[in-house]
Image 1 (cartoon, rainbow, N blue to C red):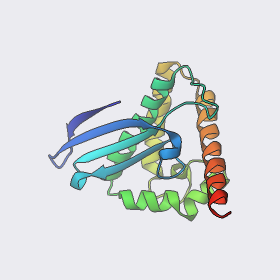
Image 2 (cartoon, helix red, strand yellow):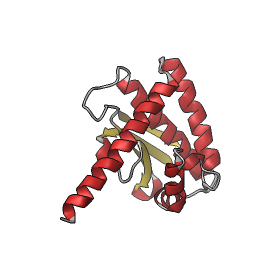
Image 3 (cartoon, rainbow, N blue to C red):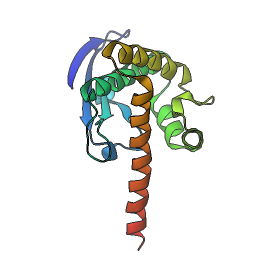
Image 4 (cartoon, helix red, strand yellow):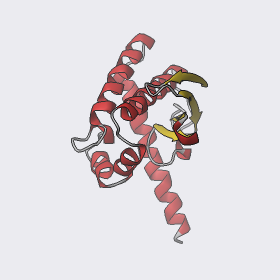
Length: 165
């Protein structure tokens, strides 16, 4: 998708990279993931390719990916501003809180115990506005994300079972 440089309130230049990757290449079952690199000078966002597991592509693929990527940028910058660390976010997402959220069919950032609930909800608000502006129906968008997530779990489970046999 590209990269951009901006200044933080601390006066440092920050490089922002947003790239699209296959969903199964995410670090865990998420359609958007952010990490700080280069000592906090580079924000690297990885967005899942918005293609159905069957291989067919949604008509607004690039716009969906942009909405997810910008959600992640807003969330990461707001977390940094509010002193919520990447480690706190990752530990919640990959830990019991994230598992409970998945069982409740919600994003970890929406969970009431999430350390980044405020930042995630702000980013989701912008994401919804972008979807509206891009002509993307929110429920169809969420359905595709849910399909990708369900497929991720199924394939990862099959891979794990294949290793154990």
